[in-house]
Length: 145
Image 1 (tube, rainbow, N blue to C red):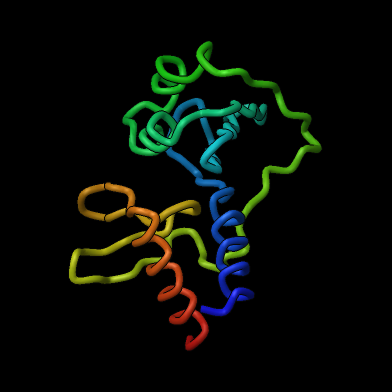
Image 2 (image 1 turned 135 degrees about the horizontal axis):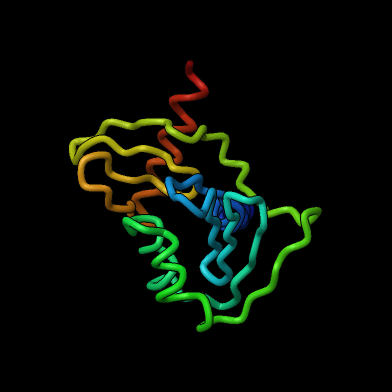
């Protein structure tokens, strides 16, 4: 494989990991995660960065029935954090796949939620390898439209 292609793919994966995912919550408006730090934006506009949050703690938050309860039970008080300045930007992806974009597969419909594809029927987040393939397919479909 071409080294330049590998490098570009790697950069895209890093950028994609920072996608901001809007969530349905009474206290949290969106979540972003980069396999290390978790970014939470509350409905009142305040934003916090939680450091060194493992994937096994951060990813379930997206599927938790109560995002706020998950935050308080598993993250707040257990990880270092700081309140972000309003001028701080949360990095986001350049994937070009709009939030809500749907892809039909033999395994069901997947919906792009901004940071990952989620199975519409089960609510399960697609594994990274599956997400990468679905992202390439979505980009290809969007180019032909």
